[in-house]
Image 1 (cartoon, rainbow, N blue to C red):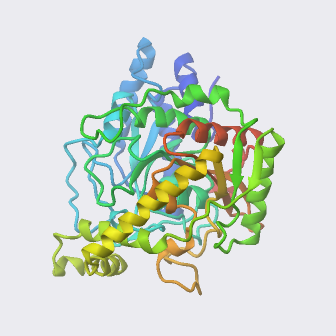
Image 2: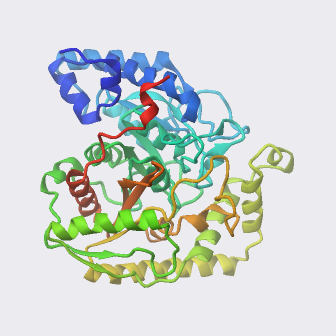
Amino acid sequence: MSYEPTQVADMTAGEMTVLFETGELSPVEAAQACLQRVHDHNPKVNAYNLLNEELTFEAARYSEERWRLGTPLGPIDGVPVAVKDIFLTQGWPNRKGSLLTSAEPQTVDAPAIAALRRNGFVPLGRTTTPEFGWKGVTDNPLDGVTCNPWDPTKVSGGSSGGSGAAVALGMGPLALGTDAGGSIRIPAGFCGVVGFKPTHGLCPMWPPSAFDPLAHVGPMTWTVADNALLLDVLAEPDPRDVTLPANQVSFRDALEDANVAGLRIAFSANFGFVDVDPEVAAAVAAAASQFEEAGAIVETCDPGFSDPLEAFNRLFYAGAANALRDIGAEDRQKMDPNLIHVAEWATGLSLLEFMQARNERAALIERMSKFHQKWDLLLTPSLPIPAFDAGLEVPQGWPHERWPTWTPFTYPFNMTGQPAISVPCGFTKSGLPIGLQIVGPRHADVAVIQAAHFYQQTRPLTSIRPAWIGST
């Protein structure tokens, strides 16, 4: 059986590898189909900032030969992968959305890329990020604005906004993201894809992030099943990061037991202090009811903490200041002025103010640990609002000037290091995606991804792609 390129571009990674094994599809054909989708639609959204088709097809041809010989390297051999332009990758530049970076190819792989390479991935290209990944929307001085795949007048979210838009449009079934305040889950929510921030340290990270210990590596995909597939690869150990012991679990295998019956699940619609858009609130409440109908014990219960925004700002923006510490005044004129603003603000923090933020982080970790003594999982909106106008850091007329003020459901769990996933749960009347966030206690990554898989199997939205995919 032969497949049309548009059919191939809409396939999951799992579907592709089944066809690679039977010989009905080749990795070269998969790469061609995804690149065709990029050529057709990237001009509208700016998800990719760099392609190198020579490197892409070289990797695809090697994979094609391995499959022909029956010797694939791993579960993603031959699958096209979109790489956020913040991961060191041999043969590719690492621009980080900044005019100050070099266009010279890198000579070393970050742990995530090394794991992908060991498993035979096909690199599609580099996806856009705000400068140094500093904010929850994606625009930067080097690449411009990245737009929402469902409505290009809206934001894609950030900082992994290019990866989120790419997956939603079939410009690659698998994508890499990073998350230090919501940077996987924000674009997953706005773009209608699945984005998982695992327990801190589960996926090795090197060089150390300037935003550590808030920063995580994680997968972004169209389905939860693909998310588990990619997570199995990303969680492979790397000697350059020994934050946690080597992962011993197959997340893909764990999906076979995705059953929520009997789980104790807390549903918090607003944390007790967040104003949530009515359409978002209704969609997330309906999603929570699906768990109850499946036999879970679901109760409305807030986690009981006050907004940790001030402590998060101190920790996160101190990371921004650290990232910019060696950049002089002349070069700073070429950078995102708002990044310079928050970095300079953080430079003015006293040591005791920074340590107080660390104390508040420790208290929040303790609070959530006690919370999960009773509750197996926590359900919340991924975001309290739908995507807003592209090119803005905050919605028009928003009472605050910085991005964390509109994403209060994500950054607390960067502070605690807990696993949290965003899975699509509906659309607004105007057709913008809405995300459900599922949070578990530290190291309960299997429970989180199982619950997400259960929900997606119960209420699949995966047959719905942005309507304009068929046009060029």
